[in-house]
Length: 354
Length: 179
Image 1: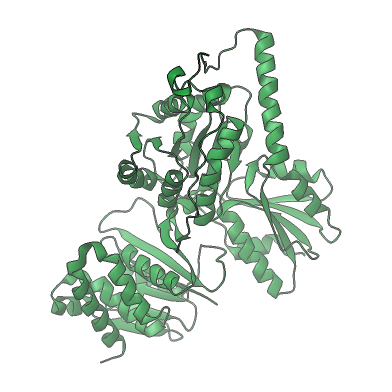
Image 2: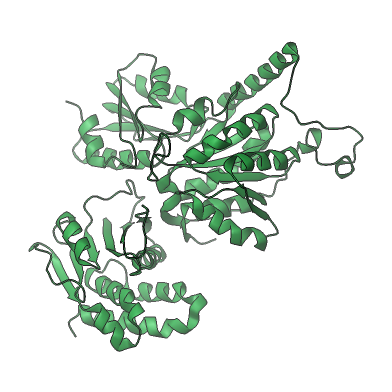
């Protein structure tokens, strides 16, 4: 199929349909409202449903309801809206239902601003809601990658019976790039009859399925949490994704950066190369599970003197980079907030060896 | 080789559409492209701008501080962005609304009275297409024939507007060539 020019938000909506997701519940918020605009037209064309909730809290429970029935379901929102959904996301994780959440981040805290930012890294990767749980979090750096990540998010959510988040910044949603849609996802969720409340007649079984997150017995809840923990460990073994850039030869410094920020860093690395200065980069594509082995191994290279965590926030991924590097190299942070995207020149000033 | 153009003016002048048509033409010509809007709390009559980046390799930073070219559709845009244009680039000036020049002697300045031209064609709303055609004819950022195809593609759902817009393209090209 040939390439088409699409806005990130619209491409995300189309990718969900191509992934066989016919349920979209959402509440509009800049900078991702085009997803709802696009799907309000597209969903009826393909026999799907778009329902605008009365609030993001309501939307998160609409998602829970559909997911509990074994349906592919997703929503999109932006930072403050995602905070409102966090209660429902915790219930969904506790009840082990697959669902996909897209967060096209804006600046914060509070109402913040609407321009591109990576301010929700810690929220997404460490604990988005109450309780003891994690989400698998994918961080696209282009419109094409956003499409591919949406397509893989549904099978991953179903594999782990866990919420999966696409964590993009405002630019990923707002910019237009050429995209190519590969084959539609044809696979139906395979394990849903084992657990989903999809109707005993539908699945031809006389066993009742129960979807819940309530475990009043402490022993049972402890065992439940151990089971969830085992899933997060499996994610770390099987589904870490990252891209290495300019790391084959020697380099004097290593950048760790994701999303739109990593593109700026790539340009900075290309510009430095012309000056004869080599800098490598690890770009996490999953920010949970984190590619800590890749970051450590790249930092350990003999020629590498320093590691830089570069992000559009005040140093949130920095903690993960420090954890990965284990004190083997000095780790520094550079970033900007509130919709200010650092320029390649600013990145060069920070990473150029003294 | 990477080329960038910033398109700037009032909301309602068709800035975003001009950028989209240009980006589409570049994509069809086989280039990597990125189109980035300004997406603050904009409104009709407010300022609007977008940037189109065209390259023969994957595009890194989508944020461009110093574009190669500028299309200025109103005076505030020219005053604000003319100093940022790289030497040797094209600065297109909407001569119908802007009565100053760019103040640069190291760029190729092109002034076209697009509103008067569009009125002669019978529809003032084609002014943005006149401007885009003049810019492309002068800068060579994409092939002119590709641009024509992209205009047809953009208006395929409003087919009766295609002949008018093709006339606007020709008028813009002639204006850029000083004919």
